[in-house]
Length: 205
Image (cartoon, rainbow, N blue to C red; front, side, top):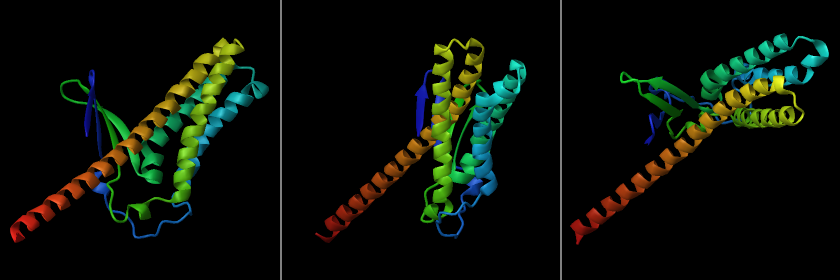
């Protein structure tokens, strides 16, 4: 699926041709990737806690700002490149071709008969809860900083909104794209079956 918007190309593709194999373990509510699940929440929750409490423990705005930005950057990288792939089978990324054109790619693991066995329900809930809740909190912080005239903190909270909002947008695109792919595959299959049945009926008549 290829959508073109101004100078950017956006495409939805299958996730990692080299990693299409799925496990035979049944779909359970247990957490299969505890380390990934921990760091999926650790960096983003830590950034929020530091933002809320840093002024109580430190009078240095620079130190607080650097700490928060480092935590947000680590969260952005971990969620974009690691936890999304492991926990829900999704990934988004960007590359520049030889002509200097930017391509946004939204990947989802290929649907198969064992797809439901590869994703843990508990991990999926943790992933989407953290992915959606934390950007909403940063939006609230942004309005709070704006209306309370805490201008120096506005750049920090905007950074939180942008970095975590980008991951949220990217994974929503992955999810929506995978559903569109499944719909197009189902439509194609039904069309082929209908055509095959009509052909057989014509031959027998």
